[in-house]
Image 1 (cartoon, helix red, strand yellow):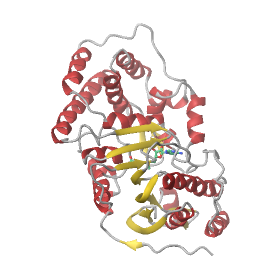
Image 2 (spheres, helix red, strand yellow):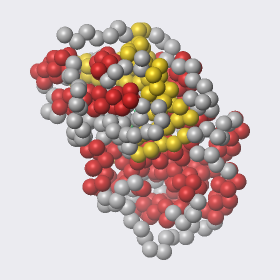
Image 3 (spheres, rainbow, N blue to C red):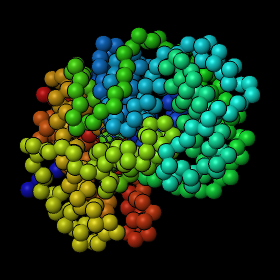
Image 4 (cartoon, rainbow, N blue to C red):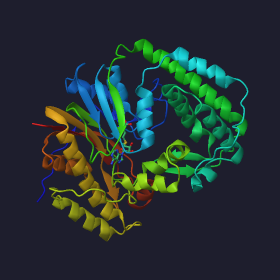
Amino acid sequence: MTTLPRVTKTTKYESLISPVRDRNNPIYNWHAFKHSYSKELVERLVKKFNLGEDSWVLDPFSGGGTTLLACKELGINSKGIDILPFSVFLSNVKTRNYNPDKLREQLKKFSGNFESAPTKNSLPDIGIMNKAFSSSVKNELLDLKFKINQIKVIEIRDFYMLGLLGILESVSNTQKAGGFLRVVEKNVSAKEVAPRFLSKIETMINDVVKFNGGLKFNKVKVDAQLSDSRKFSARKKFDAIITSPPYPNRHDYTRIYGLEMIFDFVKNNKELKQVRYDTLRSHVEAKKRFKADGYKKPEIINKLVTKIKKAGLNNSKVPEMIDGYFEDMYLSLCQMQKHLKVGGKIALVVSNVRFGGVSIPVDQILARIGEQAGLSTEAVLTARYRGNSAQQMGKFKRKPSRESIIIWEKT
Ligand SMILES: C[S@@+](CC[C@H](N)C(=O)[O-])C[C@H]1O[C@@H](n2cnc3c(N)ncnc32)[C@H](O)[C@@H]1O
C-alpha cells in the first residue's frame, strides 16, 4: 500500500501563490499570465535555499517567467524551459536588458500616422480568431504587426511585439477564464487599437526605466528555451529548481493563450494542435509522447480512478489523463533530479484536484513519485485552499482543494 507523506500546515505562503500581488509590479505585469505565482514566493524560496549570486536556478515550466525575473532581480542566474513558444518568448522579453532611449526612438516612428501594410498579411484561418476580432480590428492589428516586423534589432522588435500581444485580449471579444478562453461581446472600435498599443509601449518603456534603476545585476545570465520538461538537456547542474507544473485540472495552455499563439507563433491549426498534443498530459487532448521506463504507478492512483469512474464523469478521458499526468511528472522529476547538484533543492507548487467529487492528493502522490526519481522529500507545505470549479461546486457543494509546495532535496 502507498503511504502518503505528512502535510505540514503553514500560513507562511498563503498569499504568495498568486500573481495578483504583482499586478502593479513593473515588468512582472507586462502580460497577464494567470497561472503564475508571485515574485515574493521566489524571493522567500531563494532565501530558504540559501542561494547567492553565483547560484543557478532552473524552472522547467517557466510560464510567465516569474522565477527567472525574480532571480534576475536578486542577482541569481537562471534557465527556463517551456513547451509553449509564447511562454518562452514572454520569459525572454521580460528578462532582457534594454536601453530605454533606443526603445523610445522607435516609438517616435510609430506615433505618426498609421499607414496600412502594402499587402494585407493575414492570420491563420482558425475559428477562434474570427470570433475574437471584428475584421476592422483585425486589420489594425495586422498593420501594427507589419510595422513591428520591419524593426531590424531583434530585441526591440520582440519588445514591441510583446506590447502588441499584450493588448490582444483587451481588443478582442474574448476573456481568459480559468482554464479556457471565453467568447464575450466587447464591441471594441478599430480606432482604439493603435492608441492602446502606444500607451502599452509607453508604460513598458517607463517600467524598463524603473526596473533598471533598481537593478544592480545587469550581468546576470538568464535564458528561456523551447523544450520539454520530460526530455531536455542543459550543460550545467543547478543549485535549485523553483517551478510550478500544469495541474491535472484539464486546463489547456494552447487554448488559454490561443490568441497570442495564433497571432505570432503558429502558421496553421495543425501546428497549434501539435503543440496541444505535445504538452504534459494535464488535459484530455494531450497525447503520450515518452515511455516512462522505471516508473511504478502508486497503487492509490488506481483506487482513486476506480472511484472517479464509479462517480460518473462528463468526459470519459479523465481517468487516462490522470494516469498520464503522473507518468509525465515522473519523467519531468527524473530530468529535474538529473540536472540538480547533490544537496540541491526543488520547490514545486501544485494543486490537488477533484473529479466526480473525488479528491486527488496530487501533492502527496507527487512527493512519492519524486522519491522514485531519486529525490528525498523534505516537506509538503500547505500553501492555501482553492475553490472547486463551478461545475463541481453545483453538484458536490463547495469543497476547496489544497495547493501546496513540495520541497525535495537531492541527497
Ligand atoms: C503553471 S504554468 C507555470 C507558471 C510559472 N511558474 C509562472 O510563474 O509563470 C505551467 C507551464 O507549463 C508549461 N508546459 C506544459 N507542458 C510542458 C512540458 N511538457 N514541458 C515544459 N513546459 C510545459 C505550460 O506551457 C505553462 O507555461
